[in-house]
Image (cartoon, rainbow, N blue to C red; front, side, top):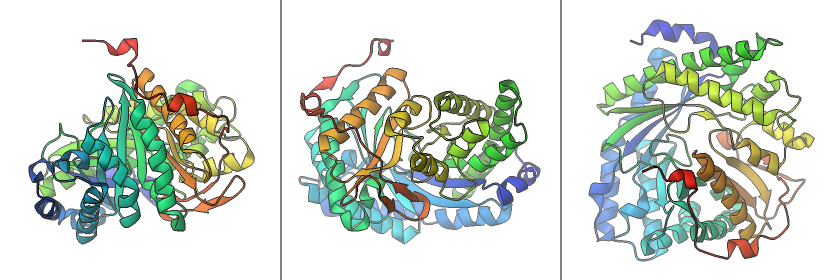
Length: 454
């Protein structure tokens, strides 16, 4: 049983070490909203979201006050819209109308973000999927709180290279459509390999078709807590280091478990998972890169970085699994550049490159995340970067993702300010050699041999 005394033990973490519950995310199935009439579909979607989520923000605030635990975001994830809208939407503009309905509902119930403007095309695309994907730049430029994701590959099915090529073009168009906001739309767009159904974190959250009608997922974050704990064992061996990370992750996850159970009980919604992810913020002392430095590196990106990150990721998961029976989502360490001041410092110092970040994604929880690149980067180059990351996920049977931002009008040496949790970032150089012929081949990269386990 979890009780208030366990929370009291974490007061120091909350007050001085940036421990927070990053999000309560309410997953809502929209499958029963499907209708061939677009007006009726939008009406059903709005009513369903409003009725399901009208008490979410109030409940989160009540739990936060009663237990003294900061709950930073309240969010909603819905069934992938490519599935929900396929019968009614015949043009990209039709799908964009649904995005506006989602945005209106999110504003009405007061949540920070709504995810699920998504498509699942790891093996092939229907005509509805293609139309949906072409709508993404329109949708993200016309909404404030809508987040979009597309799953392009999996260990079981391989990589849909037609979709990879298309998404390179879509990322570039989204940047163009939102260039007046420093291409901010791309910060709300992520592509996946092996996307999990139960991810509470944006921009990749959607309500999986295997989930209940409604579900509560909680995302917990605590890089500052881990760094502080490690500062007390400087110079100690790896066994002590690992035990310290595990014990800290255990305590952090218990806080998430408590919040999830309370939210589930008060909203009358089943509890899904706790996602224990060391997701940084731009705040000083809330950095995954700083943890790597505490482990013994001068900067993130120095030799030994991948090994240190692998250790950190594994111990965080081991501690979390002991604390809750339902740890899921992306659990582990995130390495977004713009949202982590330590990562920004490493890039500025020349210690961290795009290629080193790609190597680090082999052992962390997500992938190339919140990376600003020159606005004149070709769409095929973006597709090549996506293909590399999808291959890492496919072969290693793990979730990988790309959230990359070609900032229109800016180049290497400049920086971009996104604000809030999205932070700021230096524009990173990209390998300029062509991959056009590779990207333009079309078709599908087959699944690896170890995928055949039936």
